[in-house]
Length: 125
Image 1 (cartoon, rainbow, N blue to C red):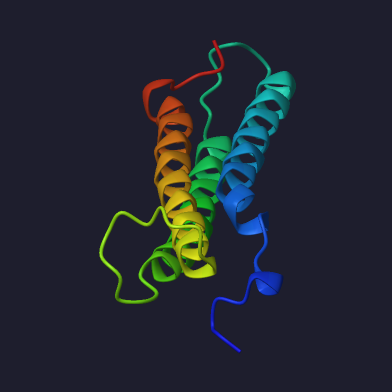
Image 2: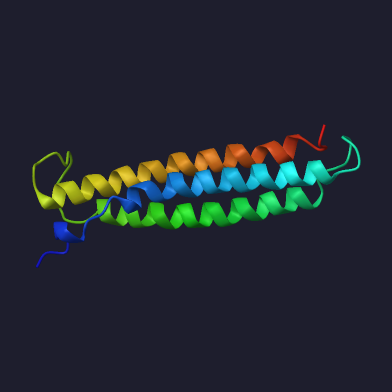
């Protein structure tokens, strides 16, 4: 039984990083919306909401980094040179690993951009 047996392959890892980004975005949006809705006026500083967004960001980046690392390791299986475009289980495994790693990088960038908002916006206005 090879390490890249296709019956163990799944598309879930491919969707994990974008799902983490979406969850991060939703949590940040909901946190800021609730904080500003309860604020006495529009000039209230973000305060605790800013700290919560920073914590959400660190957790999301760590989880996305883990998914990206798993994808990178899957991409590095075997010793065949690139490109990995043959119709074989190993090449499909490596392609899925590369796609997972690249989506993880894109998702990490999206998380950072979503978190930058609280660095530039100081109040609920």
